[in-house]
Image (cartoon, rainbow over all chains, first blue to last red; front, side, top):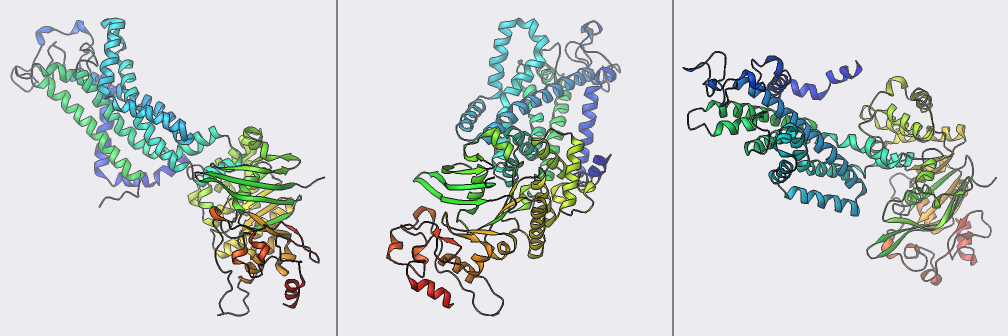
Length: 305
Length: 333
C-alpha cells in the first residue's frame, strides 16, 4: 500500500502522464502483449491444428476484398491457415523468445559485468576481451552455426520441438556483451563512491557489497537497454526465421510468416507478408519509443534541446 | 590492561610507477578506553591514510609496509578477510567527511542500519530495527519510526550526518574514527554534530580518533593531540599543553594561523611555503625549508619524536632543548 502511495506521487508516473507518446506506446504494447498471451482464447482458428486447416483455402485474400471469406478476416496463408490466428500465435512466440533471450542476456551480462567492473585488473581485461570477441561475431553467424550443428546432430524433427529454447539460447548468447559492458561501466563509476567505502568500513562482505549495494545503483541503464534489447531480440528472431534458421513453418513466428509469404508476393498474395510485417514493426517501434522515454526519465541530466 | 589501541611505527607505502612512495613514516600513538585523540595536520599530511590503515583498508596501490596496530591485544595489520570484517563496524567504526556520499542512495535508512547489525550479529530483523530506532533516538532524530522508511535524499545534510553517526554507534564499538566529520556541513550544524559526538563518546565510553585540520574543534573535543606533517607525527601531547604551549615550529605556526578574534581586520599569520609533495620530501627534517629556527643539522638528519626537557609534550625537532636560545625565546613570548 505504501509502495503504491510512493509510486503515485513519483516523478516517474508524473512524466508518464504528461507524455502522450509514452501513453500511446504503453497502451499499444499492453494490447499486443495481452493479445499474445490470450492468443489461444481469442484466435478464431488454431493454426497448429493441421486437421482443421484445408489446403483448398490457401491464399485467400482478406475478407473485404472480392473472393474474401468472412471466416478469414485477414485472409489465409499458403497452407490455408487463418492469417490473423497465425499472426497472434506468431506474436506470442516472438514475445516469448524476445523476453527469454533478454532474460538470458541479462543474467549472463550483469554477472560478468559486475565481476569485471568490481574486480578490475586482469579479470576485467580477460572478461572484456571475451565480450569483444563475442561482439565481433554477428548474431546471425552464431545462429547459423549453432542451428546448423543442432539440426545435423538431432535431426530436423527434434529441431521443431526445441526451436524456441534454442533460439532463446542463440540470441541470449550472442548479445550478452551489451549488458556486460553497460553494467561494467556503471560499476566502475559506482565502486569508488564513498558509500561503497562506507559499506566496507561497516564490515560487509564483498559479495554483499556487490549485489546489494552496487547493483541497485546500476539498474537504470540496465532497465533502458532491456527495453531496446527486447526489441532487438524480436528483430533477430524475425531475421533468423526469415532466413529459415528460426521457427519452422509448422509453428511460424512473425519472421517465418513474413518469409513464407515473401515467395508469393509477386503472385499477388501480398497480405501474407504485409500484415505480419506491420505487426512486427509496430511491436518493435512501441518498445523502442518506450525505451527512449524511459531513458529520458531515468537520466534527468540528459535534457533534450 | 593495556591500551585500547597502540599504533607503533606504522608505515604505509604506495607502489607507484616511479617506485614506492612513503605516505606514512613511523607513526606511533596510543589510545586508552574512552580516550579522545585528535590527529591534526594540513591536507596530505597522512591523517586519513592513518585512519584507514588502522582498520586495514588502504586501497591499492597502497599497502602497510611496516609497524603494528595493536587493538585490544590483537595486531590488526596481519588480519585479513573474515577476521577484519568482524572488527570493522563492530569494534571500530568510521565516520566520513561527506554524509551526502556515504549513504547508499537506493536503500532506505532502515535497510542500511538493519544490514549493518545483521552483518555482525545473529539477530532478527525486528530486533535489529529496535536497536536502530534506539540509536536514531540517541542522535536526536525526530520521529525515528517514520524516518526508518525513508531514503537518504529525504534528509538534510546535518540529519544525514546524524544518521551516519547512528550507524557508527550501532554495534556499540570501542573506537570511532571520525575523518573530518563536519567539514562538509555548515558552521552551526558542525557545532551540533561535534557536541553530539562528544556527548555520545562520553556517555558510552567510546574511544575517538578525530581526524581534522580544525584546531579549534580538536581543542574542545579531545584530550590528546598528535600533529602530523608529511607523514610523520611532529608533536604529540595533551591537548591543553599543545594548544597553550606548542613546541614544534610547525605547531606554533598552525596555532598562530588561527584567527584569535582580538584584532579584527588584521592579516592572519601563515606558515610560508607549502607542504612538500610526497614525491620529493626534502632530506633531513621534512619541515626545514619552511622552518624559522632551522639549523645545519636539519638539512641532513631527520629528527625523531622525543621528550623535550622541561616540557610534557613530545616533539620531533633538533633545535628544541638543544641550546638555551629557542626555549628562552619561547618563555619570553
